[in-house]
Length: 346
Ligand code: PEP
Ligand code: MN
Image (tube, rainbow, N blue to C red; front, side, top):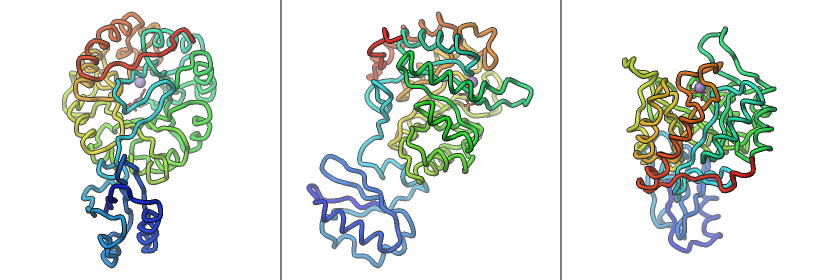
């Protein structure tokens, strides 16, 4: 249930509405718009039937929320969620590019890649320290050492850094080293992990599971938000279908659907969708045309030597070419690329 207040509602009126709703055992969440506020009510809505909500001072309208997700739904929030990432904002009017290697393989390659993607116009750096690999014999990531390297990249370049967390026991350490916590496709329904990242004060980039529907993704976001962390970024990275020509099937339609259903920013990962570097630029353009707030792209100094996802990683020249072509394309789509304000910080 959402309660929409009258324009100019007072703080006292707002408090009174909340107290009455909470006295029935429901939780409230207030989203402040320019004139009106939206009070979301979460819990057993049957109980609200005993409350003459429309008779309370300051109340203009009351609407049921039909969606199974509440906090993540578009109607629950008066505004679109904007997530600051250093000098830029995800969910604003520009396209934010996050780039870096699949895995952090060492300090040299991480710093070299970060400097290159920054000067090409990326606004954030990605790199995995804990890697979810299909085979236990594949490279698993540098783990804690990888986190130290990411913290150093952050200090040296000033770029915000994003990395995956796979285990509830690592959430605190990861949050202590980087700006954004990634929950990977394989963990999208790891409910203990979702709850744990919901308790930290760091944005969470939540990747769509390989066999997850849009609804499943939004309910996963709801797990994080229910714990108090409203800074969730949704990520479309392709889903598994019968098609074998691409690593995953990029569900470009999910981007406008997510934007319609939710107030949360949406990022697209063309690299994991494509599986081959030649397909990364066209999928990146498709994502921007579909309204993505950002892109996350894998880049490696020598993709042929990469310890993970080399086939889908762009080399430096390819990433520069992508950025060069993306800048006019995104501007024409009305979402100019947010370029790094101060690339000389590297
Ligand atoms: C990654 O970002 O490197 C990754 C493992 O992604 P996904 O969880 O989407 O497979
Ligand atoms: Mn990868």
